[in-house]
Length: 458
Image (cartoon, rainbow, N blue to C red; front, side, top):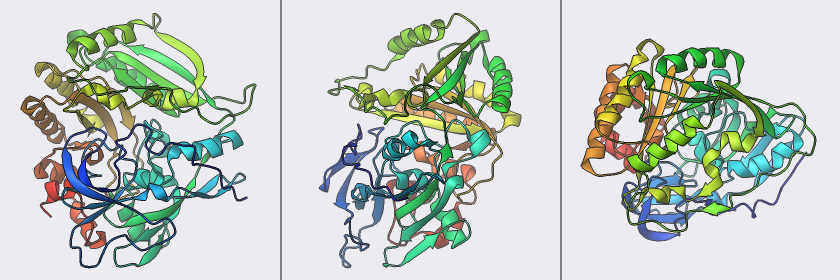
């Protein structure tokens, strides 16, 4: 059954930097670093790249700019804005297969699919990312231990190269190109459209069970039990708690709720926004200390049950657009690592390193990755515990802290997430992805990014 819903009502940027065509300064969601690049829109009804043959500058596809670092930036080069590729081409409500152009946002897919009993099989922490960007980053969600990454649910896509050649890629057709492009950070070419296999749901709600964990040891015990019994698990951690309370927080586990009264509805768009950037960061130890105390203290019991809207559980930060402005003119930096289960004590080392640096993290997330095989060559998740920290960028001291977090991660045999990085060294990248050179035969010779040049010197 073909459905071509009106997606023009969905604001493409939804709080992203929303760069305009032309040459100028640009930044990702983290607003660090800032680069000079030229943006050119991808022609909607053409498969020809909007670049002259005589222009030697490098190219890079651009989705909705929600990456935290510089994998979506191309300093001195050209980025090709793919948000004009914004049509949902087909949706089969019987099989749950949706075919959409790469610039369609996940929010638009949810809006057509959820009222008909389908939801994303894997989703990141925001629904305001494009389908092409989600594949290029092989995003993971709160159910990696059950469902793996998004790439495991991609049926096929069409890849456009700078020489004009086009390939249909799937796990069985041009499988090597499929593996290189999923998680390939846009370096193999431009995804024109993709088919995604959705998962059935009966309602727009999840049944959430929130467990108050008192320490890291307590978290690990509850997380193991939760992964065995729930599809979705994620923990908010109070990164300022120390001593015996190190790692305390709230572990939120959930399952899709059964059919409830009332129809499945389109998602509501955010109604709150941060209207301007303050001259300094409002995210600091004092404000986070107050927030953490209230967040941890609001649940009086060890365990609480609630039926909540699915979008509230999956996308808690989407309720406020442009929340990144709260971090002030220098922006924010995020560090996501994965630590092998055998070395999970290093998670405590990471939290203590941030405390020694007197750095407070507003979004501190802890969850586990399962042992699902990597779908993409450069996919980040692997079996272990993953910790995400974000910090207001305060200059050199913040960069020194991030380097220390890299060191702890690498020495524990872990890896740092390139999709959220803005400054890791080539050595850290090499330790995290020692097989990265396997991508080179598939990399488009004209495509590059600020991140790629920084970590590979190429």
